Image (cartoon, rainbow, N blue to C red; front, side, top):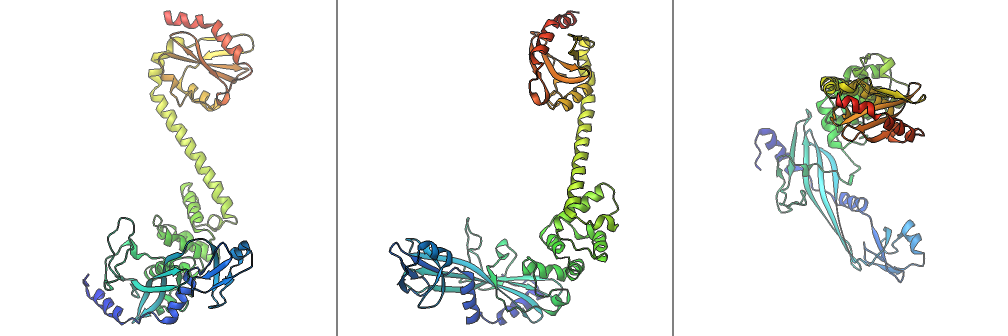
Length: 428
């Protein structure tokens, strides 16, 4: 793709001036980015897949598999693999962090190795992507073309040139290793970088501290976990939490879990707490306080949901009365157990909440052919009884969590004995 502006033109010209990867850099990449394999056969003969040398090893296969061994010919430390496989192909990515004419450059190399038992390993290395960052965070991508594939988006066309390309996810490469000798522009060092990436990809860290003074402040203040969270999370804006972050920094409070701390601040805001107070912003035990406010939020949500259900139920109160008002007042007892008809939607809600079953959630109060009664002893709910208004038979009688109680048969017998009271109301 042709450069579309002077910035891209300048980057492309500088890209052509970058030196090729050196032999020491390639050797380092090949050594550290791949496992070096020694193939053991059933007779105990080990073949070094780096140089092709073969020798017999008397150690146990298990010991070799755990400890590995060193090739007596090329002195490569090998990982022993007991297999019949003869050909081994591997592909990885390797990165170099450098500078060029005031730009921060991250170069990515596609490296591969072909190994075959009895032959010397054949390595190859080709640069596929360059990410260029200016001191103000402006970015350009120089890369090779990609082949069309429904399975692989990094199928590079190694015959194409390194040219300016529009962004594609294939350019977001996370290499196996970066070369240890690195150079960064002075602006990145000025903004707090001192050689530690804190678990972040170098490109993401560099881009963030070059474009955000708040991120720069976090890095310089040692709030690395919080910085890591904001770099990785696209759903949270650092500005939302900045006042609380300043309080934490001012009080020397180091945030050890960025995601949890932000969740905690969100909960504080929800409950109207002062998120400018060190008392709340800097908890001694973040996990404990986070769990406390999460529990409070859960209770609040449950209460809101219950109130929502109650409001919806009240809208059905008139319909319920039309269906069941004729049965209101029915009650009977055997001296110990009292049974009465539930006479409002709120009573259905309380019955379902106390008994932990679905008499309310299942909208039994709107079932035209069903009548629900509550059996109690000294005011304590024992079972909830459903009667069919067609047959006047007990459909079900459920205790707490839909379990039968020791009074189950006695309750059903009592209801059957008094079902004439219901029949009379139907006939009225």
